[in-house]
Image (cartoon, rainbow, N blue to C red; front, side, top):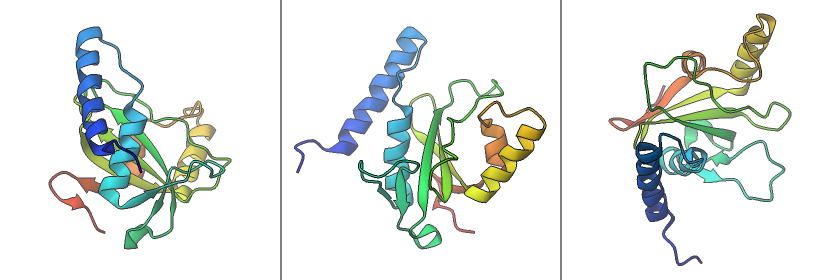
Amino acid sequence: MSIYDVSKLIAETRRLAADYKRATGTSLAVSSEIAKHDACDLLQLKPADAETEGGFDAIGEFADWQDWKIQIKGRAIFDESKSGQRIGQLKLDKRWDAVVLVLMNEDFETQEIYMAKRDEVEQELAELDSKRQNRGAMTIARFKHLARLVWTPQDGIVRD
């Protein structure tokens, strides 16, 4: 049992990361940890054990994605006018069922969460590879186009 409240630590991390970005113009590498925390909390996911073979960050507990192995990616958007922002590298050689993309604002507060199934992601990446537009990653816009919105602050979990 930890003496620390993880939710309070994440809130402080959000504040520090936002202040650091405003003060220096560069980002602290904390968005992935905040994204994992928020995705698990907001989507009723169970964090994967550190001992797992990798490839996924959480396991679904919500009925719509019960027992799915889920990769979690996060991105803080500081300038919405910039196009071409990419999500992190996907682990295609590992076991997973879906990818969740947590989009945060400049204060590292989660604004939207999208989810795409593995087969949809693999098909999209194959198309991008054939057009030589992939280079190992996918843009946020492309991911949002193939994925479905699964969470918003206004509605919580968005059902089909």
